[in-house]
Image 1 (cartoon, helix red, strand yellow):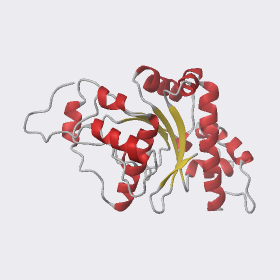
Image 2 (image 1 turned 90 degrees about the horizontal axis):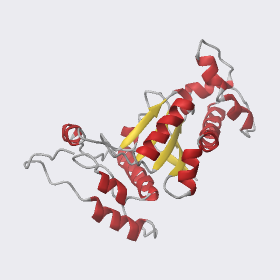
Image 3 (image 1 turned 180 degrees about the vertical axis):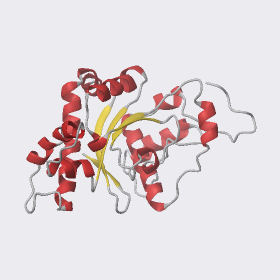
Image 4 (image 1 turned 180 degrees about the horizontal axis):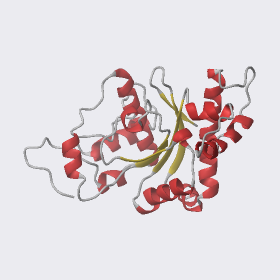
Length: 245
């Protein structure tokens, strides 16, 4: 990786932040603010490899908190672009919806070179996305697979209402099992926002199940403790990303 010019501000070392996270965040000490994986220049292999999957997830939580509070990092995208020209070492791969209101990198306050990102309506998995995830984790070394759904999802609403339109019909068919599986009392139509959000959450859970079922590569990495596969829901109102247990 090419070096930054001497005039660039010194990059904060991840070692100190990782040590602090290990000592405090994991033990649950109140009031501790976990470090972010974001800094002036791009992440290096050494910095990424020092982080555990749990630390990466905690960093995303803290990044989302900064987003909600309007205290996001001052990203130097030019420096990140230059520093990542010679290689990339993202910490995670994120599968999210194409919804223009839910850009994962912004919601989690991460910069260039920190995450692989796949976006498709309804954040569904397919062979191409699974192959991309396998590259991200087994080849490039990412340690987290994050599936991110969101509230008021149009694709989920379309699946509920059995919408049909060209190739979209087949995509929505992949979401329909989540409609059937969602336990919900009340109006089970796309007009009911609460039901749409409940199905969106179920869809995240089922997508994770499908990833483990259809990718022995990722399942093995998870069983070995090398990666974590987790789900989340982004709330358009308020901006919070809830991580699913």
